[in-house]
Length: 166
Length: 374
Image 1 (cartoon, rainbow over the protein chains, first blue to last red):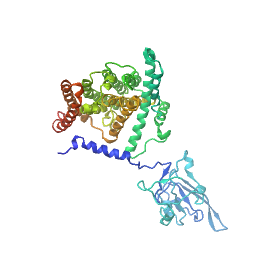
Image 2 (cartoon, helix red, strand yellow):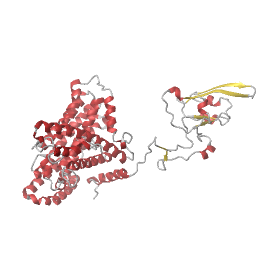
Image 3 (cartoon, chains in turn blue, purple):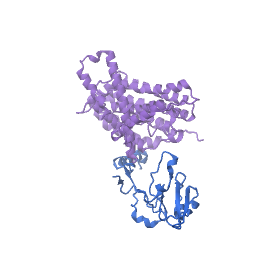
Image 4 (cartoon, chains in turn red, blue):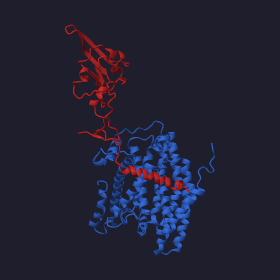
């Protein structure tokens, strides 16, 4: 005689929910606690290496959205292009990664940042000062550059430890 | 806890006053009306907090914990947000009915608490027909809900209102009959006398009556798993779909006010109300109501919603016959047993409950008998 129809099924369900009631919540309290994202994440910002960039515009040509805008000028003394304006409208960026993959001089990277909400669309446009590697808290993602992985923190999953913000 | 602080003062106030003071009719009326309304509103806020935190924990979340200490002020924040919103009246609504519905729904919920004994005799009016009063007044809420559903001129609201009517009409019978068997033992319709009669809590004397009352009560106030009236996946939000701003807040208050009402009723009728050792009477009452609410939210977090035909079948084919059998058996027991021999009912009634539930589930309860297949 099976008792599933006589309330045992309900009792089993109730015991499961009560078990969860006394268990620690598995969610991350986001602004207080945060997880490391994947090392190869395609973040919402670009990181640009000023030294390596030659202003060849390959990234701008490969961009399907056409959001990369480059203006260069010729520097005859050093026999190279000077990048005068390098601007990415991240509001239209689709994180396809073609610019990063196409760069012949390994000068363009995704960043690991994902907290890029802004109050105005105009604030989403990044110019070259924002994107420079030297400009502070920029961290290059290892997307398309696996050799960068060693420097980045390991990804934390919900089942693993939770990184507390200091 | 800030929630129950005003309640603390009731016995103190009563002790400091001269013993015949509430003999002044209007003084008594004003004091207890104010206390009752404040207690109900504060308890509703506490209930919302408990429900959200408990469901959060049962879903492996945390629940609201930002506003105030431990998120205790979340309900206040919600109320403020809702009050500041624009009250939109759709063009096609039936305006008088649409405007009247929240009030018709809200008032009975507060009025019912007049006969709820928070302490021994600590109530607005010790009616000798208290149970009848509760059952009669609380049914007016349904009229308000139907007015809201009808006046909104929205098909989802109307379907929801029809479901409310169907569930309340069906589940009123098991509720009444299970209360009737309690009244047989207590020998009084006054809620205070019912509590006084519970030397043994009636949940032990009437296990089947408690089960029937609990399930039917859940269905009558439309809590999960019987929350068909606001089945979000089917009919968006139910009868208050077209309401916004303060009118929506009133419906929200009604929803949890009814939950508090049912918790109070169950703790009064079956769990010996304000009776208990050591702690003050009002605290025992609140604790029992909170325990009942905990179980209700627990069921809410666990059980899936039933279909409308399952709900109707449960009322008419399962709860109603069991309640009637329980009433008959209780009547025989009360006639044949003397006052101090009531404990004999405990083993008899528990055995009867188990046998009846098994028998009924196996033999008599089938979904879809007599249903026209379309």
